[in-house]
Length: 454
Ligand SMILES: *Cc1c(COP(=O)(O)O)cnc(C)c1O
Image 1 (cartoon, rainbow, N blue to C red):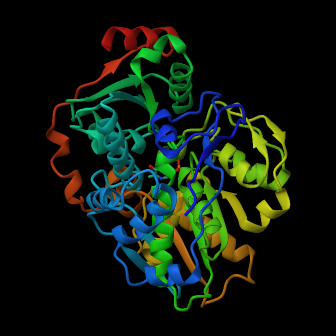
Image 2 (spheres, rainbow, N blue to C red):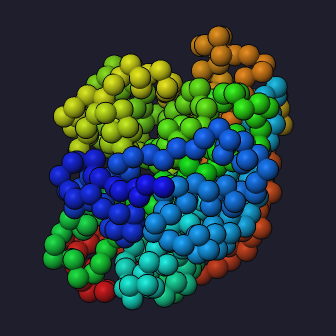
């Protein structure tokens, strides 16, 4: 097997191996790491996935990228420890399914990436005898998933910045009640502002001594784990080896969908991706017009973890289609829009539509969705209505539900008049004590905080 190296989407940084890309997070030229080559599976290899457990598929996918970076035994131990929970595939009607990625410790799909990435980082840091500070900007779920996945590790400290008005009580408590090596900062700001502070800190050489690293979906270590559930769900649901699948993915920072795009390039027969956003519709607009305009400031929508006006991973998506976009959203080389439009349908779902779909899905199918999953499901329904040639009873479609409905009790109660049952991971959290700091939203204040604290 070939060794997989990683280049920066800004094309001005050295090519590095997986370990360096993982520990650095952002490339030195502010670009995002991408594999120079995407490894592929044969049909026979994919056929075998149908008989495998989730962690076994995770091992096969991880090994394609990391075979010369970690021993088989160590990788196997890491995936087994990361994926010790269920991945329900719920049939809704015909061959239309919802994949529930909400059974991990923070009841969010981000657990999938954070757990594997945290364990891989820990593995390399131990070998090198080094320490890291993980800086995370979160619009809700990333912060809690990372904080929980890294909680209690010796070589790693975690610092999370969140916009205080944009996360739910439960999301906040999942971060602020931990303590130990986990530090939380609340900002009176938007998610994008938090992200700019983090990015500025990464490119500030005066802070090099802190060994800052990222765990946002800008880290390639987040994306490889997010390939796995695409293969898993297909392997468990397909009827024949030639069957093609449509995935619908509620998207914010586009890390989740990038996992799917890698899966397709690795050989998974994906007929179409539906990229559903909330009212932050910069990407659907781009697919329609070919012109990219970020949304500043981003809009506050019900699906709060997707309130992103300029998704970082878009530069990776553009790179997959042979274009070049820098971190500001400037496109210096156009991607192949024809190919992109063949693979992708993208649509924006309003808050009103999100609520209506939560009501309709429950009434029609007893399907319980929270706002993010509702955006994905509504995107799928719209695609099928607009494209009758795809709207076949036999067409396998999988829509991703990215959080547990119990993380959004206020919305569910308002729409459906009942309280969703809490998953075990969320029980008892209301009573725990919270710890967090607040600072002003400017880089100097943030830098001072970092220097004083660490
Ligand atoms: C983060 C998140 C998303 C968006 O995922 P991206 O990888 O940022 O596109 C969707 N739903 C939930 C619940 C999330 O936490």
